[in-house]
Image (tube, rainbow, N blue to C red; front, side):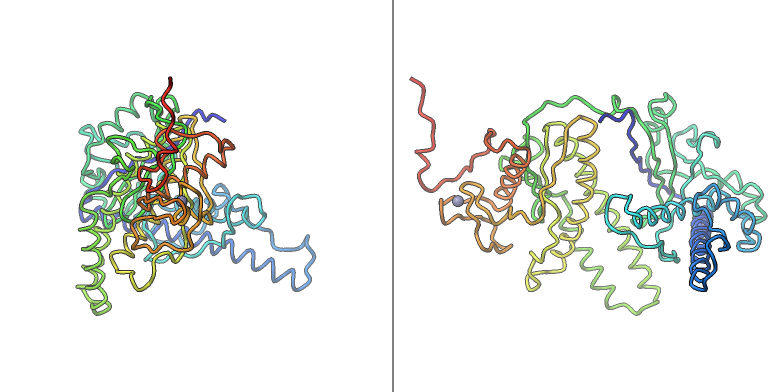
Length: 461
Ligand SMILES: [Zn+2]
């Protein structure tokens, strides 16, 4: 099925002034307050009704149930906000709307999961947020609010409370209302001005040790897909620790001749720094200033690592989605593949980043292949991709993670373990597609220790 539109996020790093940071924190706190209030109100209502039912009150005389939609919760919030949040005038109303809406969505997801009308696993009743939860606020109904970008394309507008009483806000409105960005907004601004993209919502959050703005933009699919030369029908992708990924079909410029796509440069160094920070943190006194400082530094470092990795993943997924009709991935291996004894801190860290990378890779590939009419197949995690010989299909009992090479005792093939896995994933993808018989160019092992001559095609006479 074709979608006429697709939504994507455009991230912009922010550089707010100290007073703006205070304001943003209070916005996020206000959003949290409204979120918790909504959840608590609905919870109390549900509990009252349950108690009444237990006491034998007939169904028709129960306390009326509350509707969870933002349309009914927002007026309810407005009627109590003087009492619950007497300081509400110093915060934009959008902060409260953001909290109420998010709570409504969480409640709806819980309800639909409970009734079994929602795909995916069970979802619990929304949990209350505390000050350690992620700080964020979402602005919706953006059209009514006018322009979001400054003339110099270097600032994002910050909505200020209209009826503020706090003198710090009242006196400095002009200084407060534009958030400086560390990257130019020119491209986003021109796309929005030309009507190619339309902004659906704006989320400002503190993530990865920095404040950032995330614009949710809608674009038509024709604008989105670029023509890329098709390289083949199927490609198998194996995600690893040593390499970002290994492809069953090498792509010049993206991977080496074996199909290895290297990790972002500096990643090893940054992981080591992260491990060192973790060691320092474990020695710190809880609640000390030094510890708080190290935690902030770790947040920033973690954010930088994630962003670098995501950038690399984008380059990889754009090429894969455009170059192949079907991209085959292996489902996340939630196994104890990594033995505890060999599990160094750096290794464990790279492993956790790899696991997070899997979801990001799958997410990116799913929407990018959708745009191009291509698709993603995910092979089940039970599939023995790293234990099986990609040449003869014999399954070996065990392969230690330290073994970089896969060696088959049956056919004598010797292959890099990731290349072997990528080829198995490729083959399994073909089988799932129902055309197991078809062979693909570049799908032969390069090292054959036995009987390789027999496999060559006779020259034409
Ligand atoms: Zn074999």
